[in-house]
Amino acid sequence: MGKYQRLALLGFVLFAFTLALFKASGWHVSYGFRLPEPPLVQAVTPAVVVAKPPVRKRGRHRFQREAEPTIAMGRFDSHFASSKLHTQTHAASLVELKDGRVRAFWFSGSREGAADVTINSAVFDPARNVWGAEQVVTGRDSTQRALHRYIAKVGNPVATRAADGSLWLFYVTVSLGGWAGSSISLMTSDDDGVSWSAPRRLVTSPFINISTLVKGAPFLYADGTMGLPVYHEFVSKFAEILRLDKTGKVIDKQRLAAGGQGTLQPVVLVQSEKEALVLTRYSGNAEIRRVVSIATDSGGRHWGKPVQSSLKNPDAALTALVLPDGKLLAVLNDQEWGRDSLSLQISADGGSTWRELRRLEEMSGLRNKIKDEPACLRLVESLARNSEARLDQGDGQLAAGHVDSAKLRVNADGGCAFEFSYPYMIQTHNGDIHLAYTWNRTFIKHVVFDHAWLQHRLKEHQ
Image 1 (spheres, rainbow, N blue to C red):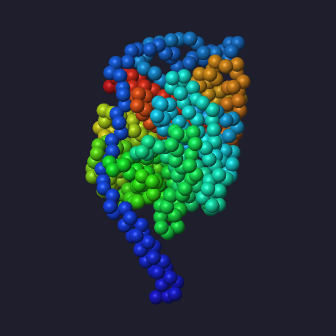
Image 2: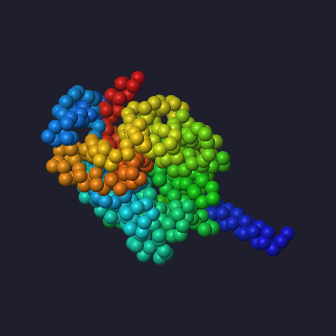
Image 3: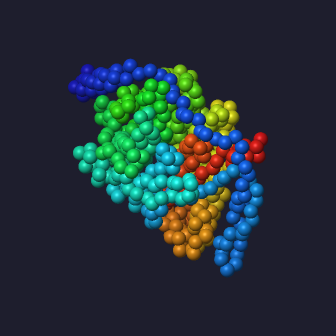
């Protein structure tokens, strides 16, 4: 055996030894999931008058909305959660506050990975149906000072409520290289996000502690410890679950499946104390591109083999949740290529089959067909006005600002390319479902619908 072979073998043995010590710290954990409190949903919700999808007509006001009310069950509404113009935004997450409001987080800057990117937040007031002002939570400089290490960029914020009632905010930090060289930092708040602790770095590996990213919603085990769905991108790509104690220390790490190569951004759906289903983005090589599912019936102690689901996936993030009646709700780019279509889907059989409830965004039919910039920007304006009522009702200057902000991204290559991606969905205690996603990399769009609307759509699609 040569010198370099001996060094390589010694390095492997040391790595295996330290990894075993790291895993040993989590051997005392128990398994089983904590079920979330069921939402308080009224049994009967009266019909409400809502407007039909806006009908455009030419005239003095090019985008004048025709008043054509109709009777529909429930509520479906949309807004822009982010408010900064001429910036790129991406990767939103949501968490319900103790007073029933909803706080969103996302990253924003001149471009993804730039040094000026910050983690931003805003609060939605459902009583007033408005979003508050956008504020900076943290960024590269403040993280660098707190961690006493060089930070090149930040991204992917994910918020959750811990067992003790505090808010935890995870986000990705990179010191060297691209996202594959990332680690995860954690901040906590005892006042629902008004103020935050200094960030600290999670130790996810005893060796080099890099290439761990977060995107999916955390969940709780029965003993109050937290499961954090993460993924690895360095050399190989695969999904994992970190287990954190009540102080935020990593006490265990599970690779979801030995054969789960190419599985990214896992979403954990807790169905019972023992059962859970994971849906993951697929980034491997396959002729048929589908979401990958991985299941457990042992409270997370063991996970099954990765299985191709019926959901299409263009190597893009998805979101999903478990409804109180056991049905699964998912939002994803229901296509094998591109991110210019976004679909709301439901499964009544635990994820075996899915059907569409509503196409939330659909621009795939116009892909590569609009080359004229004015025509492209008119389409952007129409989409923006349909996304936010105040843009449609204003004097035009606000809508013009949104269009100008989206121009560089949508019309970047002289064509007209749209992106609706990285959805994140929660159900609040009153039964409302809130969805946030990236809208053309320039705004975070928020969609909210209630239990009555969902039930009405289910009846329509029976």
